[in-house]
Length: 161
Length: 210
Image (cartoon, rainbow over all chains, first blue to last red; front, side):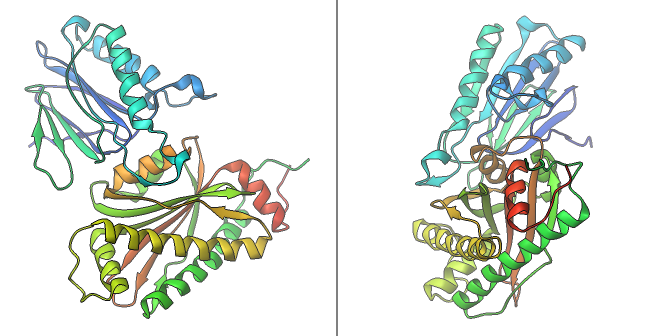
């Protein structure tokens, strides 16, 4: 059996059929998968923050939606993916914490989701599924043989989109 | 002008001092927890490392384990963030103990459980900061506690991101607290930025290389 390819926080991986790519425990982070069903090649990006321009001296472009998405797109195109065929799915962007510290509830999750959707729209990539928001963490697995995305949360059954 | 502490300039001596701070602060917190539970509570020798958030996540591992996490922002002269992370079974046991229930009664996290765990985090943080504040003569004020009960990876990353600890390196002081009979195992994290360390070292009378 093939071992799932694991993606850490602020990182991305691309692969082809019949691999699976997984990222564990998305909270406010957004997991974005891109998949070309014709060549069965795809990638998964674990986005931490919406906008790299708010930081100076960015070392890891994969951390941000605005720099991470183009980075993964480039690698996918090198591997033979056609932009117009790409299908995007995203999950995460949750609000994990409850409490009264206002400074802590600026909802980075929602900002990550919005930035990701905006960049996809600008790039002309269609979004097939968006499982975002809420209060729960998510683990996601992209199956490159089918393009299906499996979402695991605590206390509920698996969801496949 | 004080020197800026950074990765390169931070020596073993500095890290030892930080470990000792962890030791003293958590010693105090551990005593408070022991009094609350009326049980013996021990802790591992704290570890102090400079690490990126990504490295921290990798090091901690078990990203899908269900945990209860209390986190507080610390304001004052040394802005920081404190996190207490208990695995689910430990959190339930804490709720039973502090609510005077038979061990094994609690097996999920409801609102009552949440406020019990939040209070534990509040109390531990208060004891920790009081010990450091007294030692270094610094003002460190904890904010209200925030709570989450979910996958470790989701909870940990979100707390660091929302707390603003996304820069390349953070100081992580880490230890494990455990109750005598191993019913409770909790991780403690104290996270601060490079620039805050200057203030801390200076207050302790430790000179940083310029």
